Image (cartoon, rainbow, N blue to C red; front, side, top):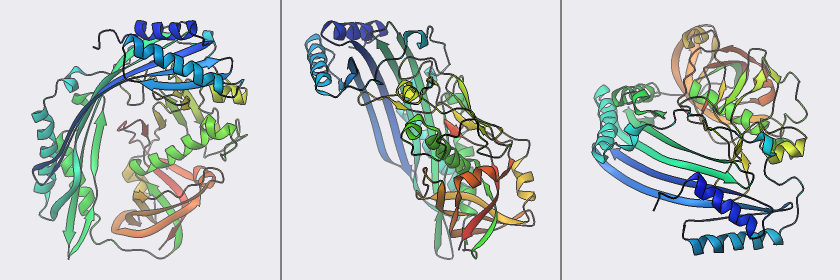
Amino acid sequence: MTFHLTKEFAAGVAQQSVERGASAAEVVIRQRTEFSVGVRLGEVETLKESTDRGLGLRILIHGRQSSVSGSDFSRDALTSLIDEAVELARLTSPDETAGLPDPQELATSVPNLDLYDEAIEKLSTEEQIEMALRAERAAQEFSVQIINFDGGGFDSAYGSVVLANSLGFAGEFQTTSCSLASVPVAAEDGKMQRDYWYDVRRKLSEMDSPEEIGITAARRTLRKLGGRAVPTQSVPVVLEPNMARDLLGDIFNAASGESIFRKASFLVGQLGEQVASRRLTVIDDGSMPRGLGSRPFDGEGLPTRRTVVIREGVLESYLLNTYTARKLGLRSTGNAGRGLSGATGVEAGNLYIEPGPYSPDEIIKSVTKGLLITELLGFGVNIVTGDYSRSASGIWIENGELTFPVQGVTIAGNLKEMLSSIEMIGNDLDFRGSVVSPTLLIGRMTIGG
């Protein structure tokens, strides 16, 4: 029974919660159908399909707050869920900061951001399996050195989100997404290497072809064969877009209101300060049409928007939900995220580094001696101090040319110094995800052999 799971239904649950003792209430309903096929050497290795539907209820009683969830939408079950939430809220300690947004901040319209593609929902199982197999075949046929695969396949999802609260906000929207990945294994002289390539989009027609993804994955894997370590030294580092996005993820963690009000970030107290190279501008935009991080309203019903986090190196804004904004004496940036249960968190929309004027080739040619990073492993980032150390592999650059593969090294530095040392930014920004970056050149980092 899905016909009644509308914004009007959610608003009714919120109103019923107030009638049963809440001072305010917020209801979220999520429906999602997911399909996933994994292939290996021409065979279907895994096949999964699931449909989930649930309701999350956040109750407030004058600063006391609780959150419950359920999947039974019958009248009796909902009444029981509301009573349970009200009872739980009465047992919690009051927090004056907790609460729904100010009514005047709530979205007054739900723009169509073109997040749904009927073609994805209509994909047959056979079509999705065939796309996964086509990518694998293309990689295998590219070289006899591709001898195996370590995963890869096609995933798709479609669903809807409904949000309503007792202040009168009610909205709903539909989304789709699909992704395709190939993970070849290549061999040379008895030694094996693996790498991958992928694409992920809101629209099926915007995704790279399976053949393009498979061949790119094969090329990336083959170029790792024969890798070796290099001596410890301090040199320029070029980050491929997929690796630079990791750095952007660290910026998000440091600029998130949760890290800021807990004083667990090196960006605490830095608003208006120069925190990075003047070449760097970081933007979060949850209102971008067809964006993988887009939504017409955030997890509290505020309109999503374009926020400049860092402009030409100056920290211009943190990313905030209502709770963290109130803690910091600021206003929400429309970055509230929430699941069916638990407190509202902070999440990015489409977070990206504004592209620069240089092609990736021009950036590599500018380096006399350095390392192109193609893979980062492990978690070695301290957001409080900015200390940074990751295992890495890549391609050595000598006199502007890619020479030999490098593996078994670490790169180390400090996030603050790394952001200030960005010397060149590529023109190759591609929204192959919701957190994306073009190629970056960092002037100097320590490579540990």
